[in-house]
Amino acid sequence: MELLATLRIALRALKVNKLRSVLTMLGIIIGVGAVITMIAVGGGAQARVEEQIKSLGSNLMIIVPGSTTSGGVRLGGSSAQTLTEDDAWAITREVQEVQVTAPSNRGSGQIVAGNNNWSTVIQGVTPEYLEARDWPIVAGRGFEPQEVSGAGKVALIGQSVAKQLFGDADPIDQQVRIRKVPFVIVGVLDKKGQSMMGQDQDDVIIVPLSTARNRLFGNPQGKLRRVGVISVKVRDGQNMKDAEDKIRELMRQRHKLQPGAEDDFTIRNLTEILQAQEASSKILTLLLLAVASVSLLVGGIGIMNIMLVSVTERTREIGLRMAVGARANDILKQFLVEAVTLSLIGGLLGIALGLGGSLAIGEFAGWRTNLSPESVVLAVGFAAAIGIFFGFYPARKASRLLPIEALRYE
Image 1 (cartoon, rainbow, N blue to C red):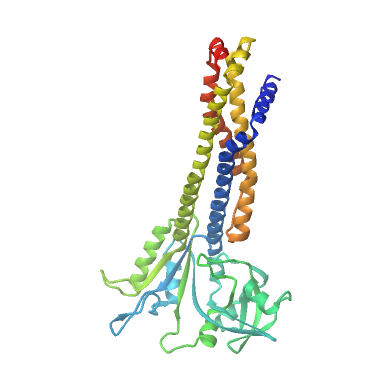
Image 2: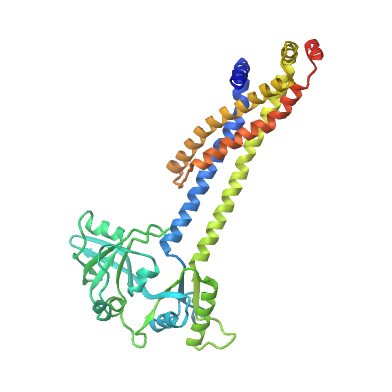
């Protein structure tokens, strides 16, 4: 009951100077709103990175060909054709940390289904590709062994291609033409979303590697088993760096590279890349949060300033209360409750501002935001702590006034 009475007195005192109270709360309102908005933006960025890691597949590395030189001109990465299917199978066989490898070739072309057509990515893969990428089939089936070995004209399609060619109709067992070659759709892949480069991973059609080589991409003499990419999935719990070093050593042996010679291939550890991106995102979130917290500190200084002014203005009132029996502890609690009340009311209004700001950023800027209840509780708790910290000194000063001197104050 004593606390409620103190709260009523504090609210009554704040109502006396409404405009001043609102202006004092403004710093807390902006601070809490900024903190909530920055946490939401940072959380959205981290969630996006986590989705990208999940969409790529866990513990994934890819091996691509190195560069080649023509007429003294280096043509850049992946310009050489140095990888083979045998390289992929050797990695699986000789590197114990590796769970599965998946050689693949990539191209593009026009896909025709009835009166609809769509230009998309064409991937020639082995069945291990879906395991390496953690990419389940949501409808239909995968490739049969005889289809893989016999260059069967069957295909799996991504969600984007299925939508463009078939709309809401069931694509299973439907016939399409890929580069004028007839294929039958046997399965639909689960949705993957965008890659870390912003590309739609679902805009793809997948065929057996032997089919892509023999029927779609051509089969140049002497390059019967060349591939463009080898995807490597490392077993859970294994060290990615150790696996990468062993794969590099094995590949150099297979390609007969002399000591000191440059690799004719490149190993990209996608998990490390995305983890570095996630760490950068967390650092950026902390930086934004620190900047937003400055507003809360400014708001706290404003509360201290106004409470000191309030103590000065109400010196005679304090002396009168002490003269009729109020203890120093009662005066301390009164002014401390006033400061905390200012902070909490400002914090609640700041929550509304933060929620509105997060929604506005998501709607108009197109940024993903992820607002958690913990961030709201944290912001309000921080606002209350600001009120207690910056309100304690004015409250302590008021409680230490001598009644006689306070009553004489003009």
